[in-house]
Image (cartoon, rainbow, N blue to C red; front, side, top):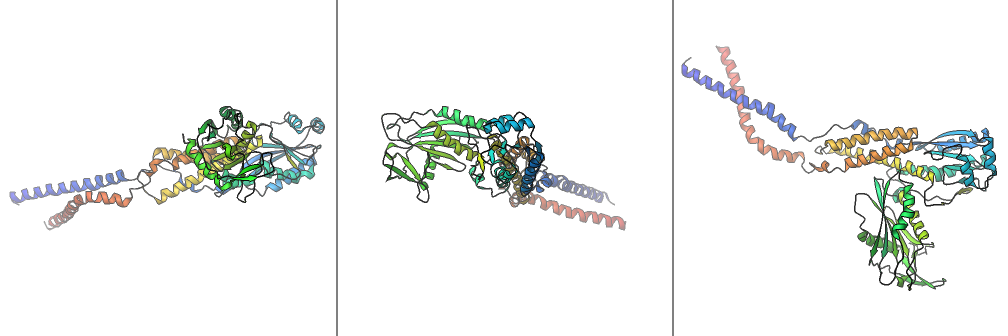
Length: 525
């Protein structure tokens, strides 16, 4: 072999190995590096746990204690209650029965008032215990069943068991409301009450459209603190409430009233059609300025009706007069309005504060989730003697909210997991992953606590799960690459890499032919 041929072979070797090095770097390092840097980042998520969620299997265990004068009555009443509640899979009763001590039984039969009897019961049981309700036999009852504000119900004898079951079902435990909290459709109470969250702003607005014609003497801030504040203090375990009050002036509205003669001392009233009232709420929403934070606002508005159309009476959709001490109406998940008015005069208008604020409290109870109780034949429900909710109403609301939160959290996570499976370029960063894992952990913890009957902790875990799931589902970073699908990614990168890949592919072809030629040449030699 001549020196010229050796030099040519050396140059060819150098050129081929340079091409091979370029191809190797591009294919072995460049392509994987490009693939890794352009992939959608997703942290590991517990998809198996999320897919195993079953909202229809949720239930809450609650304790019911039967205290009777004798063992037979206690067993009979407990057995009938247990049998009736077997049809409700959303609530499981853990029933225990005891015979009343002789001294306590004698005392319960001699005290005149049921409230005194409740005080006697409190000496042997803890009435402050959440998720526990006591049914106690008390012979001298004017009705078969008596239910008060504490976690106690009295029944006369074993024959009152059917009435007692109705009181437990329709008033105390409300399994139908629990079903509504567990299902997607919900029930009427769920359609009215505000959705769950960290807390609420309760805003009392006094709307005075004509301050120049009539003065109003009303201390809104004091009324909010005295009435609304005392009410929400009892619900601090459920939500954080921020109380506010404001005055809105010159907010006029055309009620389109119709003057109707009647038999009142004044001789007439002004009729307002029910279908006009939602327009008033629209006007109030424009001026209320309640959207000052991410917390939902419960609006309570006292609208001072102008003198010239006072007094006003609301007429319903059937054109029938709404007979009520206060003319008021409520909008689900928004708030309530009270229409206050009188004839114009020299003296300032002074609203009937207990009546107005009592109406607001009745509306607030529904908006929070405490339902109105229908009458039951043979059962007496003690009227509220203060602004505070009944103790067992708070427990009922805790059960409803716990089920509602854990169910909503599971649905949010399932929806998010489904989206991740359908849309491959949704980014899941560390923060979103942490929120999802927190929600899953609290959901599992909530199920165990609900099954064990630990209502207070179950609600807290359910709320944490709900907030974490909502945070993950509404995270803005999920939309980072939503409008940058794979076909657009390839459309951008292919024009960039294709000019480079042509010489690489040709070099790769030449390398293969060269190596094959070398092998044949070596064999022939």
